Length: 308
Image 1 (spheres, rainbow, N blue to C red):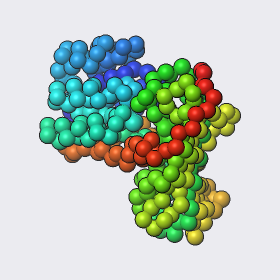
Image 2: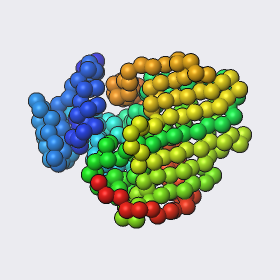
Image 3: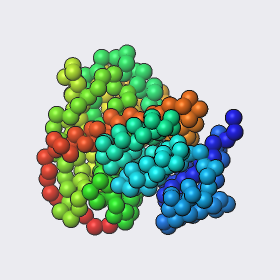
Image 4: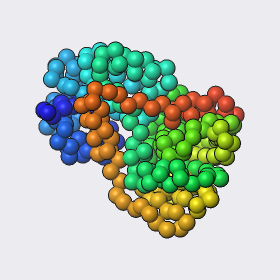
């Protein structure tokens, strides 16, 4: 099979750090174009808009969309209407409804749509899922705390309505939780902390349960300095499971089971190629649905203004 001619839309830090190296190392792809208002990729044709790119480079087979979620729907629909497969960076959109519409359009055109959740491909995630499938779970705690000034400096879009705020990293935790727990969970209560000068939360405390009344809690915070915490801890009758460092390390009863270099984005692009070849889509909206539920049920608490 010939390589998939792929293009990138939205050339920022995550594209340079993760997308471009992953595409370059995968023989299933050939990167042939990019579109971005501010960035360019050396060695290929660059454009200012997706419309300009698609008109000028009809050989494109697939488009990877890496702009902020508030702007992703229009670009995705443009690509699908042009007959291109679409890779959606996380979160796949600003709302559930727009992603459902994209899924319907992709299905009607026989195209592949991929809602990518990179944290699900962390090294310890599948082993954690297998362990929890065979153990009685008593309690689950999620601690996802990081320094927004380090990871998202001066990114105003992330604080705007639809930018998700602390749920931008928090949705990574939700993507893992919804994958590794044996039964679906749902939110019972939440408190969202909004800086008085921002339209998106800087912290969130959330309680979940499932049909069997399993207690699950999550603490998301963007104000943590020093050590960053990306941990999921499950107390089970088979021992304490700790999935740490965003899923990179897995320990059971204090014994390290997995500690491997992350290969999340290479795995994402391998999966995208797989679904294109299979002529199917992969669009799981469970993590985004939990974010929407948190905004629906959450009590809003205003805190001190945040300035970069």
